[in-house]
Image (cartoon, rainbow, N blue to C red):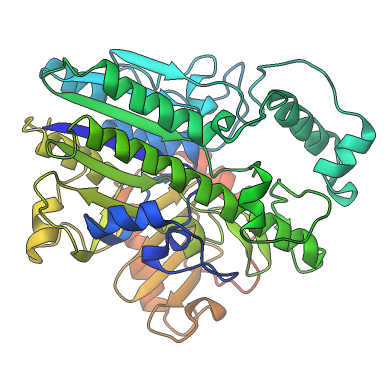
Length: 468
C-alpha cells in the first residue's frame, strides 16, 4: 500500500471546520471537510515535542525528543529555537530510511526552510527531496530592499524593531515575483507533490511526505482570500507579535485573523488539487493518506498572539489528524483516543506491513480506533523547552520542569482555562507532574532545569514541591 503524509505547519485544529471554528468565526475548508467525511478523524491528537524541528524529529523517527538529552543545539547558520532544535541524530533511523529498505520509493516535497538549513538532515532516506525556497527568513534574496513607506504598509509602525523590520524585509523580498495564486507557497508545494505522483507511477509502492509551511506566519495571501473574511481595506498585518493583544488596534487584529483564515483556505483549495491528482492517477484506491499539523497558533486567544509552551493552550497544542484508508475503513468514525506524533510514525510502519523496530516508542493505533476498543495511552505528555504539559480525560496540567509555576485546569468545567485549580487539587497536580517526569525516565538534563529557573512564572500559577 502506498502512503502519503501531509503536514501543514501551524494549522489550528479549530480552523478545520469538521472540528469546529476559532473564536472569530468559521474558516472555509471544503476540501479538508471532504477528506474528513472519508477518513478516521482523531479528536485528541497532540505533538510529542515542540516547536517546528523537535516536532518533525519525533514524527520522522517515531522516538521521543523529550527530555532533550544531547539536544542543546547552537549550530552555525541557524538560531537557537528551543531544546531539540537541531538535526535528527545519526543513530536514529528515519521512517524514510526504514521504508526504503523495505522496498518503498520515498519522496519529500517541502518548503519548511528550517529543515534545510546548514547542518540539518531531515531529507535523510528520501530517494528524491525537493526544497521550495523563500519562506520567512530563508536568505533566498538580498534585494531589492523595501522603502520606509513599504515597511509601514507591511508592518505596523508600533511593531517595528530592528528584528521585526529585518524579518519583514526578507519575507517581502522573497515574494516579489508572486503575481498569481499558483505562485504562493502552499499552491507550489501541493502542485509539486502532485507532479511527484505523476512522475513516479512506475513505483511498486511509495511513501511521499508533503510539508507545507503555510499557514505559518507571515500570513501572506492573495487579497481575494483575505477578503473572504474581511472586506475592509487598510494597512497589512501579517506577523505574529508574540505579545499581549489586549491593547492591539481592533482592525489590525481582525486583519491578522482574516489573513490567517485566508491562508488556511488557500491551503485547503490546493490540497483539493492534490486529491484530484490522486483521483486521476488512480491512487485513491491504493494509497493511505495521513493529514495532520505540527501545532496551532494563538491569534488573540486569551489576549495573546503567538505560540508557546508555557502557559500552554489548546489552540496551539491540539492538532488535526485524519487518516483516509483506500478501502474506506474508518470513514465517518471519530475517535477520542489519545495519540501523538510518534504514534503516527508507528502507524505508518504498521500500515506498510513493516516490522516496527524496537527503538520506535510510538504505537500503532488505527485498528484500535476504528474498532472503538483498546486505547494505546491514557494521557499525552507534550514538551516545549523547560515546560511540560500533561493532558488526560479530566485535566490539563502545565508546569516548568523544576516544579514551579504550575497551572492545572479542569476540562470538565464550563470554561476550563479561566481558573487555575492547582491549589485546590495539589495531589492531582503532583501526580501529573510525576507522570511528566516518568515520561522523561526521571532523567531530565541539568541544563533544562537551568532553563526553567530562568523562565518567569505565569500569572496566577502555583508552586509544587520544587526539585530538591
